Length: 268
Image (cartoon, rainbow, N blue to C red; front, side, top):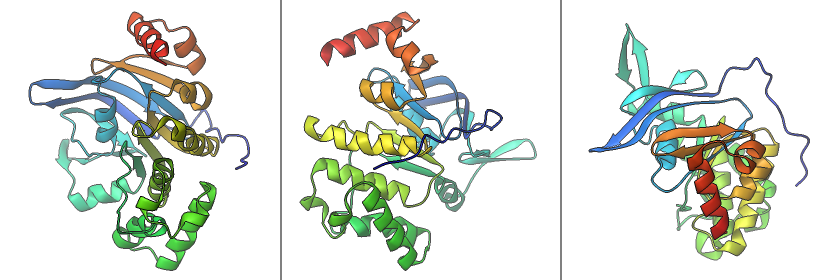
C-alpha cells in the first residue's frame, strides 16, 4: 500500500483529545491519579508503561467504557460522557454516549469478531445495524477497507478461517467502518503469535501515514520509534515522561522510564 506523505495538522489546530486531571479508582485501588494529555489532530501517540500503570484504563475512559471519578476528557470539543448545564455536570444518556462514540474507533487485545458472521458482515454490522447506514454504501466502504488492509479476498471468510493476524486486521477495519476521528488501540498485537505481529503493525503504520489520529497502548518499541509522533510513558497512574520518540526512547530523562526501557529491551 502506497500513501502520500503524512498529513500534519496546522500548528493552530485545537487538540482533538484533551484530558485534564483524570482520576479513576476501582474500589480502594486508584488506577489513574491525575492524567493530563493533549492529542492533536493527525497525531500518533504511543503510550508505554509497565503492567498496572493505568494505560488500558485511560484508553477505556476516553471511550467512556469506564466512567472517570474526577477531571474531564474532551474529544472533538465535547466532554465525553457528560454535559455541563448551569454550572453542573450531568451524565449523558446511553443514546447520547453512543452518538459520541461514533467519533471513536477502538481495537482491543482480543479480536472479538462475531464467529457466525463473515469478515464483511462483521465490518458492516455497526454502520448498518447500529447507525442505520445504507447497506449498499456500507458494503462498498467495507470492501474498500478490506482492500486497504490486503484482505479483499477474505470478505466471505468466517473468523475461524482466518489467522490471528488476519482477524485483528478485520477488527481494525471494523473499527474504521464508522469513519472515526480517533482510533484507540489497546495492545493490539499482544494476543498474536510473534510471526503475525508484523502484518498488524504494517496496517497501523499505513493508518498513521494517512494522518488518522491514533492513541496506541503497546509494548512494540519498534512501532513507537517508527510511527509515533510522541511517546508517553505512564507508571503508577500518572504520566511520568513524554516527548519525541527519539528523545524518550534513546535518552529518557526520568529514572523510571530508563529502568522500564532497559528491562524491556533486555527481554526483547
